[in-house]
Amino acid sequence: MIQSLKTVFGRFWAELRRRRVIKTTIAYVIGAWVVVEASSTVFPALLLPDWTVTLVVVAALVALPLVVVLAWIFDIERKGGGDSPPPPEATPVADVADKVTGAARSLPPLASSAQTSVAVMCFDSPQGDTDSALLAQGIATELHHLLSRVNRLRVAARLSSFAHAGSASDVRSIGKSLDVSFLITGSVICLGEQLHVTVEMDDTGSGVQVWSRTYDRTRQDLLNVLKVIAEDVASAFGGVQLESEIRQAVALPTANLNAWSRVQRARGYLLDFTPAALNEAVQLLENALQLDPEYAAARAALASVLAERMINGLGADVATDKQRAVELATIASDTSPNDPFVLKLSGVALACTGQYEMALILVRRAVGLAPYDLGAWGYLGWPLVASGKSTELDELHRIMQRMLDSAPSHPGAPFWLFHRSVASSLGGDNEQAVQLAADSVQQNPRIPIVWMQYANALGSTGRLELAEKAIGRAQAVGPYMAAHYEVVIRAMCGNKDVFAKRVTGVRAVARQKIS
Image (cartoon, rainbow, N blue to C red):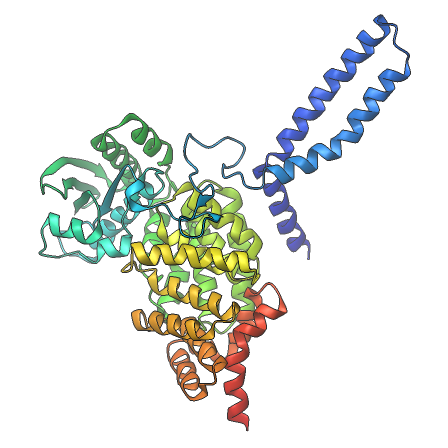
């Protein structure tokens, strides 16, 4: 109980800071004090009655609550962070007019609006041993993360880029496939404690190498090398403003190399929907936190893995996973309010555990800080369906459809289809929900909760036999899915009506089996 109260108070305090209520209140108090002091000196000199000074004091006190309320209300859409204002143009997530409907909604920016675009390929490890290969992949992953935080830079999805590892295709072909202007490639050679890292950048239009650099460092200096590489890439792109944004985005996630390496290894398991894979990811992330208890990215990643294990029926103890995910996500987002990676993973964890309002705040902030991160935009789907409000469902459809139109092969596309299917079910269009869920499981048949949404949509249209088969598929990939489905869905729904629509079809199958 005490821990719960601490968590609630901590989040409330963080929200007061985020909306600048505290700074506004302090500024008002100081200003009011100056006015009162001035009036007590000036009014007698003007031969005004004594009660006029009292009136000023009373007015200042009465206005204080109003100032606090207005500070809370009018700063609700601020997308800056912490106690300092965001860098110029760092938050383009302000409402964008939808050219089709004319509605003012936040949408992912068009690819053409980026100043430039790049794909970070999986780095090579010529030595071929597992340790060097993991290190090479980790360096490329972290570089991808650092560059994704730059507002004006569009970075191709990591999994899409890494899928070209070992490809015989030339630079131009890969660039066309990923729709980027530049490719960053590299290699890592480990010689005991010494590292030899080579990084290159190619222009995908001409196929010409435009930049190359070699870094000889020790293993212990690896994290500093990543910072130097990101800054060097900034210089290679050119442009003072872009370079400034990259320098502001670069920050060492942890000083502990072993903790960092465990997080990188864990990220390799995140889309492998098996109990063994997620349990391995949990163990790696727990180890990372033991090595560095303040590592916010490790906290957020662990929170998201626990939530993923919970909602996909891949863990037996739903209650424990839920409680731990909430605690980790809350602490991570409070301690790293300007890291979009932390914010989006914390947001999805909170959305899956019933904290959908806070989840929406965090993920909106993540896309404000990294507007070309389509993965973060996709995470908005989790909290936007929770309330069942038509405005939020409409926003979800527009966001997901824009991404499906612009990046149909993105690794997150099956989830975007899933979110649209859920929104269609809540909006009463069960036929569309069936088709969207069918498209999702066709793209990725290994996601248990998508199979359950497919089953629910089918059951809601009376196709109970097909719905039962879909439940069987969900149970095959998520051993605890059928048993825990209603518990999981109940936690994710903001009201009884939303919950009812998300389980109606599944309950129809259960009733048929009993009869």
